[in-house]
Image (cartoon, rainbow, N blue to C red; front, side, top):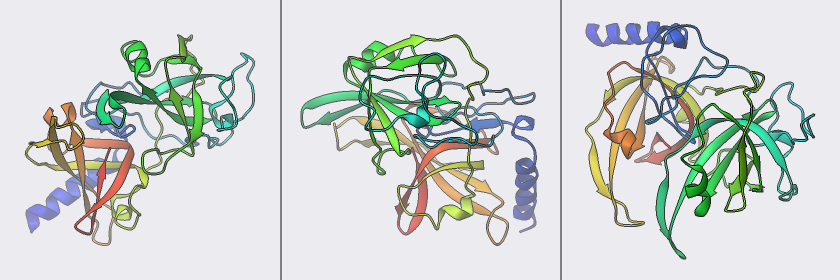
Length: 294
């Protein structure tokens, strides 16, 4: 009992420190996850390590997602003729152009659908007005996956804006990119924010409905052994691992939640007491207990 209390006190001291003062890791791009040490004060936009989940800077205020303006954000056309992310709606059509920073990028995912095999990947795009998620399908995956880099600024055009599906999307509106999409690298602009968070405590997660999208900060309490399962969708073998995250919320000053990672993220090794920042994690329910996934 004394040892358990000591660990709780140690974790609480870690969470009381600013994120740049301790080992940092991030999540879920669209639930994305990183686990790597970071030192020094936070930068305007956080550097991200590739796989498992995005490395984040300290949380900042004024977060907008999927067409929801940030505090102080504006809509309409800018001086460069680009629309703001917050101004995009399903009624915009395809004749639009935006300029934004990639703050999240997923792996390529393959699937078998009614029309045969397919593939996709997702990114989150940020500008001064907010954030929006975008999905690349089919040929656009081959055209753009390798050339798009985290934290760089690009011009995007030729996509379709539609209402987000709460089962799969975290924003009010989302973008679909296809073979007609055009993307050009833009000059760095420090006024375009990087990755931002709106944290939900782990204790709050148990009261949220399934499919809620949350940002979570927690300390790795335990990394369970990796397992391999056969996917029903295409029969592929895929690695899976559960990470138990802790924070000091809850009536007794302690709360845990299980966070599931897949593929290369499941193959990675995670050091105990690493701090994770999960962005865009999805709440699910299993055996009357809430869990997190990507």
